[in-house]
Amino acid sequence: MGRKTILLLIVGALGAYYVYTPLPDNIEEPWKLMWVTTCLKTITHLGHLAELLGISNSMDITGFFMSIQEVPPTSDENVTVMETTFNNVPVRIYLPKRKSETLRRGLFYVHGGGWCMGSADDYFYDLLSRRTADRLDAVVISTNYRLAPKYHFPVQFEDVYTALKWFLDPQILESYGVDPGRIGVSGDSAGGNLAAAVAQQLLEDPDVKIKLKVQSLIYPALQNFDFDLPSYQENAHYPVLSKSLMVRFWSEYFTTDRSLKKAMLSNQHIPLESSHLFKFVNWSSLLPEKFKKGHVYKTPTHGSSELAKKYPGILDVKASPLLADDSKLRGLPLTYVITCQYDVLRDDGLMYVTRLQNSGVRVIHNHLEGAFHGTLYFLFTKVGYRAADQYINWLHENL
Ligand SMILES: *[C@@H]1O[C@H](CO)[C@@H](O)[C@H](O)[C@H]1NC(C)=O
Ligand SMILES: *[C@@H]1O[C@H](CO)[C@@H](O)[C@H](O)[C@H]1NC(C)=O
Image (cartoon, rainbow, N blue to C red; front, side, top):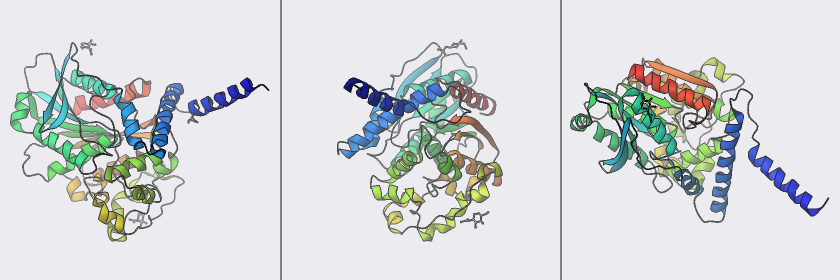
């Protein structure tokens, strides 16, 4: 074999390694997913390399590549798009152009990206908000918030809450022509976490008189107590969101100190004093039977109290909405939850559905078979397009 042949073989093998991802067989348009995965793999590896060389935190590198997709606020024939700040938090506003005799519905949207990346300005988030505003004839507020690794919990939560509270001021609602009786919050992934957390926070805030009509949580992250859930075990190495990346996101939400990630990966980060909270995330009692199959519940091992002392956020209900007790959950509005079959976060969503139902909250659950984490973001796939349609239809009927 000549040198050229060997080189070609090596390049070919590397290329195949990058492009080829083993996928389950009920995936629609597998090539689109492989293409997404190849891009993500490349970016992730560049990030790891930069981190290894001490150039940058890998989250910043991934965030940089994601920010390439940001688009300016551009109005179209149906929707006026503008940027402003709500009490210093930058938001993007989507206002339908057609005349309305009555007040409009309002939707407050929180983007995902593991608390580390993403933006309301991202092309796909812009597209989703635009479509939502147009189809629902609703005012959509898509909020930004400061990101890790520069900012840690509770900054992300507080930015989102600050913007939401500003929006819920009766005078602000009036200025945008929004009906105070028809407002919802919505978010995906880490944005679903923030949406769920601020919806809970509103229940305890005497300053806010307005009640949400709905919350819709799209494959939300809802707890950082147990990273050994069946969904974490089954989907640990599937594309889009691996267990290791999700644990990195969670740890980065609280700190860049790697010892937290290490403890989280071995599920030894929660101190003994907090073991009473495990009942809120006990998949053995909270998952429907069909999702438990083949798994045996192990009570998580406890870690030292050091980490929780240093990073109390890991025990905070504002970070893990599943830690709220039933009496608090009871006050939540009508809820829509999307979960995906191939997603480490699947069981977070499933457990929240059970807990809300047990607390008497009306929940509509849409489980997407054959779908991966991030489906609604990938609006160029059939499954993503369909899921976005279902989500918007649900809002149309219930908000
Ligand atoms: C604007 O609305 C019309 C009527 O619903 C629709 O056919 C058209 O595609 C919309 N335009 C955009 C850019 O969404
Ligand atoms: C979890 O639930 C199972 C079955 O319902 C129960 O046996 C176990 O004690 C629970 N563990 C915790 C930590 O709540």
